[in-house]
Length: 498
Image (cartoon, rainbow, N blue to C red; front, side, top):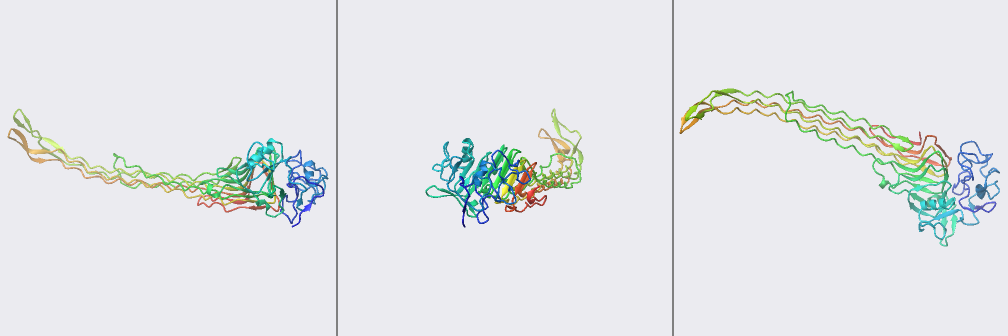
C-alpha cells in the first residue's frame, strides 16, 4: 500500500482522507467540522442539502473537492488552499502537534500537566478533560485497551489509528484494520461505553473500537448501550469507529408463590370442596425507548387461589340422665341430671396458594442510542448483541391442606344410683352422653396462579428518538442480533428503531 503526500503541508495526521486502498478514515470526505459551524448548518455554498455540514456530505459530486468557503480548520486537510483534498492515505510532514492536541498512552500517567508526547496521560477521559481545559481540540490515543467509560466534550476530537515507535514518533497507520489499534472497553459499572449529553456543540471519534461492558458484568435484565447521545445541542461524528455491544441481560425467572395459610380453627360447616386455583398473571408489556433509555415491565403476578371449603358437619352427641352422687351432712344426696356429649366439628379449609411472581424483563442491546441529537456516521460498524430472554413467571404456591374434622367430647360421668359407703356417697354404674362423630375434613386451598412471562429484550443497532437525526454512510456496517425470546411478548430486532 502506498500513502500519498498532500498537495501542501498538513499539521495533523488525524486530518486526513482515506483512499479506497487505505482504511476508510473519513468515508467520502473530511471529518473535521469547519470552525464556527455545527452539524445543523451548511458551511459552504456548494454543500449538498440536509441538516449536516461538510463533516458528512461532500461539497460537490466529486468527494475529493471542497468548496472555496472551507475555513481554516478544514484547510489543514486541504493544505491551506480550500480546494482539493488528497485522494489517498495522506502521509504527513510532521507528527501530531502538541499545541493543538493532548496525547494518551497505556503507559502514561494522569496528572494536571499530562498530555505531551513525552509525558502522555494514562486515560482517555483525562485526556479529554485536559484538552477541554487547555482549549485544545484533539486527543491522540496510542495503541492499547482502555477500560473506562467516556464522557465527551464539545469541540474535542478523539482519534485512534496511530502507531508509536520506540523513539516516541507518532505516525498514522494506513492499514485497513487500524481502527482496532485502540479499544475503549466500558467498565463493568458503566451504563454506556461513551456518553455525549447536552454537549452544546460537536464532538468527533475517529478510528476507534468501542466495546460495551464485558458480558460477564451484565446483570440480569440489564440494558447495554454502546454510545448514548442526548440533547438538541449535541452533535457527534463517528469516523471508522467500530461499536460492538454484548447481549442484554436475561430477565429473572419469577419467584414461586408462597404456600397457602394454615386452616382456621373455627368455621361453619360446608361441603369440603377444594378451593379454586388462581389465574395466571399477564405477560409483561413490550419495552419502550424514551429519552431516559429503555424500560420494560415484568410479567404480572398470578392471583392467589381461594380457600378450601370447610368439611361437612359432625353428628350431635347423645344425652342420658344420671346422678352426680354428692355427700351433704353425712347423707348421700342424689339429684337427677342429664349428661350430654358434644357434637363433632367440621375441619376448616386450607388457605389458597399465593400467585407466582412475574418473570423479569429481558434487557436490550443497543449500539447507538440517540435522542434529540444529531449523529453522523461514516464507515465503521454499529453492532448490537442479542436481546435478553424474557423468562417465565414463577409457579403459584400450593394451597394448604384442609384440617380434619374433630369428634365431639363425651358428656360428664353420671351414675344410675348412689350409696353411702365408708362415709362417702359413691355412685354405682356410671353413665355418660356419647360424643358426636367428627365432621368432614376441610378442602385444600387452590393453587396460586402462574406468574406472567417477562417480555423479551430488544436488539437494535440504532435507536433514534424525539428529533434525533442519524446518518450512516453506505460503508457503515449496521448489524443486530436476535430479539429476546418470550412466551409472552418477544422482543424486537432491527437495524433502526423506531
